[in-house]
Length: 439
Image (cartoon, rainbow, N blue to C red):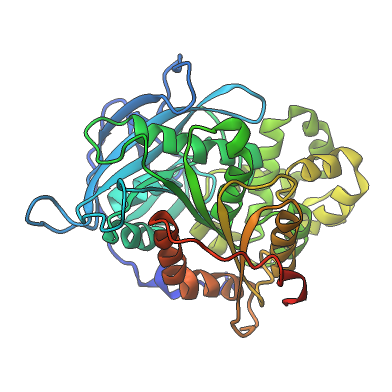
């Protein structure tokens, strides 16, 4: 079968695998990847958000021996308690990385929460597993999978500056008790903020209760940290949030849904729908009404996939193939008040964010559309937020995924530097006064 997806070179260049010995209690995904027993939550969770459920040493796939410790640092796999959109307790996994480098700024060592970009919906797709294995690959039940830890570069850049890092795997990604609630505003925002609390609760680290906190995320991660910045004042006022980098945030899911249909990343539509139905079971009858057999099969198939699998298996397909009436999912959402209202409730930009936020978006990005991200910055400015709007001026390469990935790569160094300056106490100048006249 000819696949039209233009896969980024970084995916094609990786040809190694790492074998991990299975624990007797380890789970095996439908795609043949061992999920360590660590990722299965206990029946009872701690009472407080951010409380640690369990921890274990996390060997890094990419590390070097150093004088006092391994470079870029020592890692710990964590599971912590959070709260989902419905107010229920939920276990979330991730990892904490203690840098080998010294923090050269003033005050205590800062902490940055890294919210990963789109990894997929299969439990084998987590960033914490990717940090350990580099490449996660498997085959089972006639299915294959591949997941690459592309967030490692940003994490290691932060560690090199002496900044401690904690990354979240998000609600349901990795943990075997539920499906990942992809781009759910509240679940993601809570998971990010509680990751900071969990890192603070770890013993024998160099961060303290006075450590300033920054947030870093691009694409799905950009939406997650943007939501966290909005929720901090009411959900986690104890987290000393100073600055947030929100790259290409999917702030308006109605616009993003329209944009990704028929692109390389159309599989993200299925991840969104499956997650929304899990969070709000009352949407199930509408989904059953409009999805045909092909649509239901696609949702089931994609729920076990990582982003690389979705690119190979579903790129350039259109959601009109999945519906009973031949209409796109965008058209169906627009015609159904319950779906329209649910997506409206996921809108980011209706609350003033804490700290200063750098909203970066490629002007040619037509996968997570530039205009809706710019609108987020404008909305925050109108509410009195401190916003630095950073349009990334790259040419249109004629490919939605290329237009989306290009700003991630070209702006990453500037984004990490910007966060480091803010955490060192250097003030940022808001661009709100000139934002309305910028492109």
